[in-house]
Length: 246
Image (cartoon, rainbow, N blue to C red; front, side, top):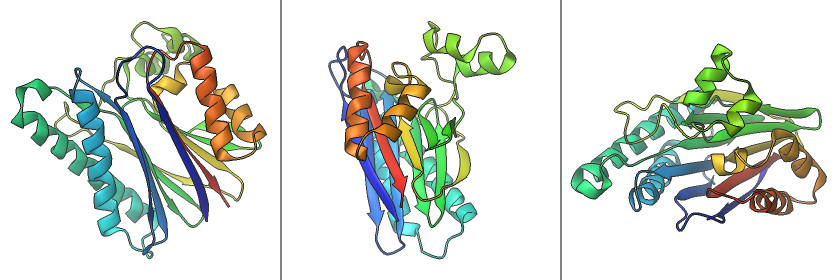
């Protein structure tokens, strides 16, 4: 059993919300599919790309998921759904020059009894939150993440780096758009937080941990995280999905 809540906001600077998210209960198989996308590529392209990715990804998983699938099979199905989303964005971009180069990040969770399968492309993230702390499940496909891995900068410096928005993988611009997949076991009471960099760049991991653990209900926790982002200027769209295992 899982409890889920999502939130999205344009922020305080951008004119349009180019993030998109979806939560789908696949009743026949008992899975819940959650996906968050952060679009990019011009005034219209980013919104279109994220919308296509969310729709294509969820439709494919609603079509193929069965209750007998193992976590590894779920990971493979999620990866294939990502590749279909990538092709759909590329097809749309090829039909109209104004959408050339549009793209989107993607982070998703497909629940199973005892955990969730996480998939990501780009710098939208998944965090596993328990009473013992917060751990990032995903690895950013970004320039600053590579710099942190090499030891050129610290994780804290990466949060303020002028090139923190430069990503190295995205759906749309990349022919293959290789995704990463993770199997994340979850015990009752534990949380998963999926979010775009609009939240990551304004709210620290420790603040995420505190707000998720110390607020009554998922909706209140997300509202508090959004408010912190807005208190700090919310220069980007902010989108998050919070899941709790029951």
